Every structure is written in C-alpha cells, then in structure tokens.
Amino acid sequence: MEHLDGRSFFDAFSSGAREVIDNQEGLNRINVYPVPDGDTGTNLAATLSHILGSTRVSDSAGDTLDSMSSAAIVGARGNSGAIFAQFLCGLSEGFGRGASVTLEHFARAVATARDRAYEALSAPHEGTILSTITGWARSLAEHVIKARTFHELFDRTLPDVERSVARTPEQLDVLKRSGVVDAGAQGFYHFVRGARDFLRTGRAPADRPAAAPVIDLEAPHDVPGSAEALTFRYCTEVLADIPGVEELRPALEALGDSLIVVHAGSRVRVHVHTDRPDEVVELLRAHGRVRQQKADDMREQYETVHHRRHPVALVTDSACDLPRAILDEHQVHVIPLRVLFGDIEYLDRVTLTPERFGTLQRTARPYPTTSQPPSADLRRTFAWLARHYESIIAVHTSGKLSGTFAASAREAARVTGRKITVVDSRGLSGSLGLVVLAAAEAIAAGRSHDEVVAGIEAALPRARILVSVLTLDYMVRGGRVSPLKGLLATLLNLKPIVSLDPEGRSLLFGKAFSVQANLSKILAMVTADHRAHPLRSWAVVHAGVPEAARAFADRVRAAVGSEPRYLMEISPVVSLNSGPGAIAVVTLGS
Image (cartoon, rainbow, N blue to C red; front, side, top):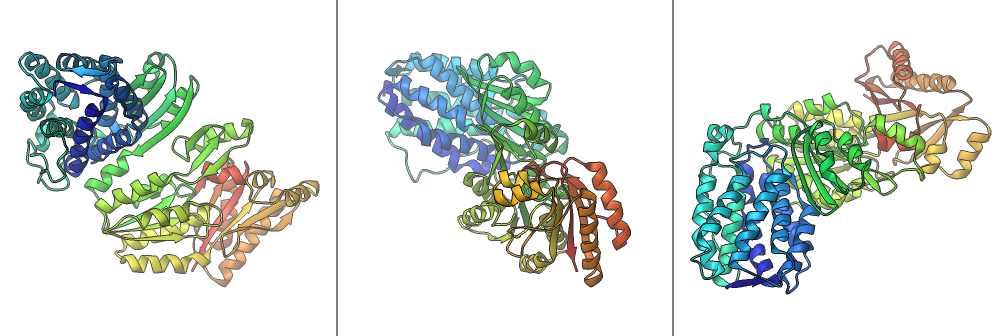
C-alpha cells in the first residue's frame, strides 16, 4: 500500500486497537504511573473499543479520521486514553479533508499529532506514552524518504517504537524502581505493531500471537506501587461543549493534577485528578454544556489492586448512607446513582455533594429526577472486581424504589468465572447502610460467601427506617406518594412519619402536627422495638439539619442505652424525595 484511503486506514487502526485490547491485562499489571491503580490497559481498551464502535467509515481518509477523533473525545477513559484521543485529534488535523494519505503526508500528520498530545497536558512528563509517540514521529520522519509502502514504513519504524518504550524506566524513576516500562507507552507499541500486521498482510490475523513485551510481563500480579502517588482521590473526566476552554486551564489546574484538556472545536474532554470532582463539573457547567461525567475512585482501585483485605467483594449503591470512613475501612465498593437537573446528569455523592444539592434543590426548575446507574457502569464494576476478588456480593436499594437491583442482577449474570450474589435489601438510606455494615463486618470476621449472604437475608426483616419529614411535597414530586395524599397532608398541616413496608415500598403512618411530636413518636417506637428485641445497631441520618439530628440522637441514646454507629447527612438521591429538614433513625434488631 502506497497510500491509505478511509477504509484501509480504519482497518489498520482496528488491527492495532485489537492488539491493545488483547493485551490489556498485561498493561494493567505494569501500571504504576501516574498512579498505581492497575487500569491503564482497561482504559486504553475501552477508549479504542468506543472508537471502533462509533466511527462512521467512508472512502475518504479525512472524513473517517474526523469521525474517529470525535468518537475518541466522547469515549476516552483514563490518562492514556485521553492522550490517545488528543493524538487522534492532532492526526485528523494533520490529515485534513483529503480522500487518501501518502507516506509523506502520514509522517507529517503524526508529527502534528505529537505536538497536540503534548499541548493537551499541563505538565507533560517524559517516560510515558508521549515519549513513545515522539520516538515514532522522529523515526517516521527519518525513514519515510526510503520506504515505498506503508508496510515497509511501519516495519522500519517499529523497532524505534520498541526502543523508546524500553527507555521509559530511564526517564521515570518510579518505573525503574518497579522494574517495568510505562503501561501507556507499551500500549502504544502494541497499537503500532497491530497496525503493521494489517499493512503487511491486508488482514488482521485472528490467531496471531500476543506481542512480545519489551520487559517481561510475567511479573507478580501486584506490581510494586506506592500510595504516595495518590495525591488526589478521583480520576475525573467531563465531556462538554465549551468554546475557548483553554482559558479555563488555570482554574482547572488549581483543582488537581494530571490535567489533560482534549478538544476539537468546541467539543472538550477534561481529565484531571482531584479531590473535588463536583467543583470541576460546576466550573465547566458555568461556561458551557456538560454532556457526560465520570469520576473513578483511584484510592479504592489502588487498595483493591495492592491491599485487598478479604476474598469477598462487597458492593452497594450510593443510596446506602454509610460514612466514607466506614466504607474505606471495609473496602465497600459504591456505585453512584444519577441525579438529573434538566439535561445535566450528576453522580450522586461524587460530582453532586449534599451541600451543592441543597442549593440546586431549592432553585431547580423543573424539579430534579433520579436514575439508576447505566448498565455499562454496572458491568464494568463487576468485571473489575472479578479480576481481583474470589466472589462478589452486591446489596442494593429496594427494588420497589429503584431499578438498580434489577439492572445489577442482570449485568452480574453476564460476568462468568466468579460467584456473584445480588440482593434486594428492600431498604433505603441508613437502613440499607446498617445491613451493608453488618455484611462488611461478617466478611472481616472471615465468614464465607454463603454465610454472609445468609446473614444479610436474616437481617433484612429486622432493619427499619423511620423518617420525620417536614412536608410530603418532595415525595409527591418524586412519585413516592400520590398527589391526593400530599394535598390532604398539606391542608391538615400534618407531619407524616415515613417508613418502608416489608416489600420495600414507601409507607406513611403516625401523622402529627409538629416535627417535635413526630420525633417523640419515632422515639417511642424505637424504644418499644428495643424492649422487644434489643437493638444490634442504630444510626441517625438527616437532610441538612446536623444540629437537630445530633439532638435527636442524644434522645435515642438515652432511651436505648447505646451509642449510634454513625450520624450523617443523607445522599442527594435520597434527599430528593425526603426534602430538606428530614430526620430519620435507622435500626437493626437482634
């Protein structure tokens, strides 16, 4: 091939992408930079898979690559995925709108792509995928004069790509200490090698051997990594439409590190490591339209890869109100539900904090709604955990209140090779939290998978939530209570107590004419429950009223003679239906 049109270029790209996908586990094993969270291979594979599935292929090389670069911005995941996306955007810029690409044109376009990849990073480092792209660009410029075909050009330059990967430990101390090359650089080598295979044969061999690694990948599964690299907790990515996004770079830099800004026109993908993903989203929302959000917990990923404490993974969703410290202590994995304000979909408790939600809730029109996590997120979570745990238990919000349980069970069934049990808690908020905490403690005590599941099932009928709400208006808006009941409560100035029935549906009873009367009734019910069956544990949760909740917890403490397991503010997805000012006591009987 002396030139590439749109279809032959896409076929070569596909061959390179498939080699990366085939080798993603090896890349995960050597991932120590920029953080040792073991997902570079997964992220590169996800990025390339999205491009393969979303590109509109045509005869024109320029049009095909333009479609590929747009798909890359939408589907990029992780540090290396974002850099690769910007590389493709630069390549598209270098190609222009030509119908086909010559060898010389291709070499110049790769040089442009290299420059754009460096420009995307606020603090580019050598010894990464950037160095390998640079090595290839230089080699292409050197060999394009003598090469006659694309196959020959790739054949001549592949050894230089290999050598640039081998040099990465000399450029980054963390790689040298760990005895590995950079995972992103190795991934780029796989990509070029796979594309070369297509250019040599005109087809992508289905039975080709895996590419020989530059440095032995048969290392222990847990490559040495240091938690010191985890300066920030969340790998945050936001897709948005923002003209002039470069003007926001200083403000984004102030929120974290590892900033990469990938853009083509006004379509932007921002990647940053931060402790404040909510502020990243709000900054971008203030200057354009936010289309997509992602925030991976790198600390959780690091602990899973390097310091897994138990063979059984425990999963729940963000409607489970447990303090962050308890979740971290027991390595409980939380899948965020979604809260929708108009056309913006936030990640519950991650890109939308309870404090920010309180502000938006008072002013939003129309009223926000909730949704379950996308199936892809559930599937990705189970697949990730299956790589690191012997079995998985997921305990979710009541299936009568959310579709998360059903979706989770469906996606768990698609993951093979691991025992996975998905449980409908028939609970919500703190009542779900106490059940999950009991399960976590059983896992920590060395109980088997089946013993933990049996313990959960036994605990569910003994978990109770009693909520004092100021008004039923919010439950009416959220569809939890009929408009007629809400109207009657308003007309009579009733302050209802909300609970859940045995099936997990909303239940109203014990109406009073004041909040204090409501709390006194709740206290009486908790006391009666404790006398009949001593409480194993209890907690108080609230919607933006910490002092009132603390005072109520003091009353419960005096009545039952034990300390609460915790006191905390409920998640936005729960507060959306309870409304501000709600206070709840949650109990787990013995």
